[in-house]
Amino acid sequence: MTTWILAVLLLYLAQIYLSAVLFLPAESIWQHAGGRDVLPEKGKYAGRSDKALVNMKENLPFFLVPAVLAYVLPGTDMALAVTGAKVFFFGRLAYVPFYLSGIPGPRSLSYGVAFVGNVLMAWALLG
Image (cartoon, rainbow, N blue to C red; front, top):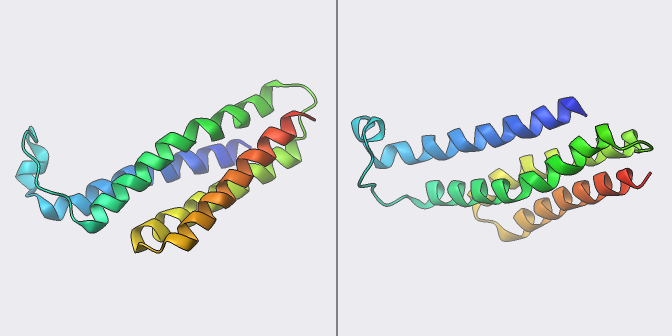
């Protein structure tokens, strides 16, 4: 489970940097390094990346709580919890490029896959 928790946190970190990298061409390196009081408008992909990042921030607690509780609660079906964590990770991994591409169907499907991962982890807690 630790591996998958770290993988999800690395994915979150990668999304933070992706958002910054996609925004960098809209502003100069000096503006990026400065106070950033006035920011230029974000382009299409930087905006989508930011929205995907916000979505990840919203879903991260719903992943981390059952993932950590799997360690704490006795009688947890750890194999099912790990499977749920894997499903969540791969669903979220697919979500980012689908969101950036602007294709709504696959994006929603990958979100649903990640949600199923959370459900599996919650189910595993019930033993």
